Length: 98
Image 1 (cartoon, one colour):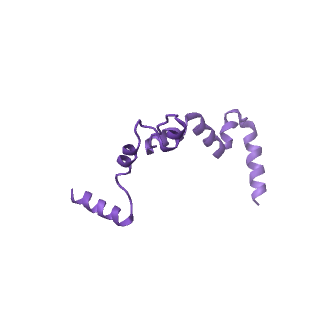
Image 2 (tube, one colour):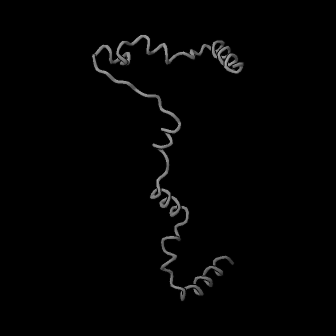
Image 3 (cartoon, one colour):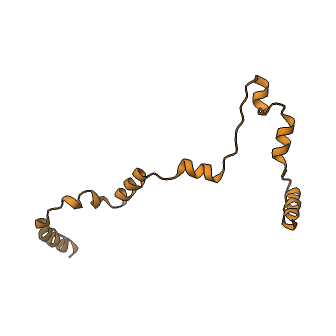
């Protein structure tokens, strides 16, 4: 209760209207928005929550697989690697380091 009073006092000092939801519905007679009341069209827009945003932007499994493959490109060809090439690749790698 005390935190609510402090919050309301702080909001009032900053010029924030904490009752903006109530004020908006009192001015409208049928639940329409201010702009659409002139044209006669009804449109009610809901407030987007963090949960709504996250559900719309969460990564999918195909996206995650694609991302991991972009980080580690050898994952695409490592299962088809011919192990007889390993000694030659090791020698070539050793020669390129010296």
